[in-house]
Length: 176
Image 1: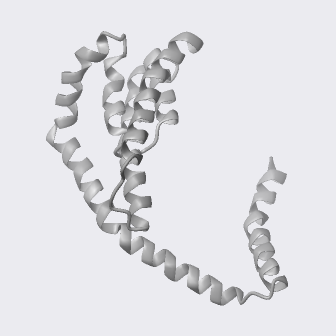
Image 2: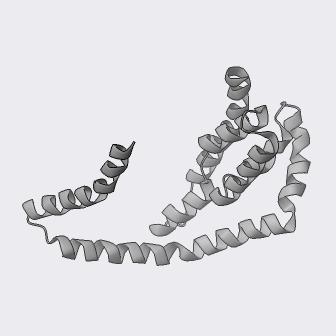
Image 3: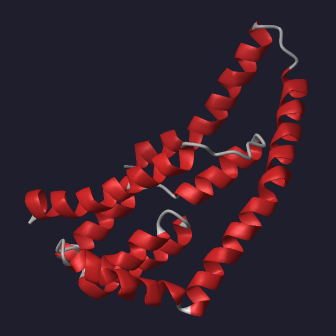
């Protein structure tokens, strides 16, 4: 284990040396390229900041207002017909919006029901098989100034819904 730890200590310096060496072989001004990339990174950061602030504010408002709990109880009757555990519904609602918020809900589910319970397993598979759709669209589309999402949002939400349903189905079929 100590050899693995000492190996990981050298990975980053070796990787940087390989990149710089390759740049020198190709006769690229490595420092200039680094500065240009850093400028582009800062520009991207500043261009997506308004979308991230808006998204973070919206998620905080959903949590603080109790809307998440109200909406969860409203749609739980629909999901009970499909034998979907109501305890996982808040995770299902928040996962496409916020990674950190959904991680907090997953932690709560695992603390209350245990990681080996049916609810814990479904929540874990759901968390791993879905994406923070709105966050991803805000970051990536905002970084390249795309205003019209067209088919990206409906396709991504359809994939999320499929993952919600299939996580429940597969856990019940394969893990219980």
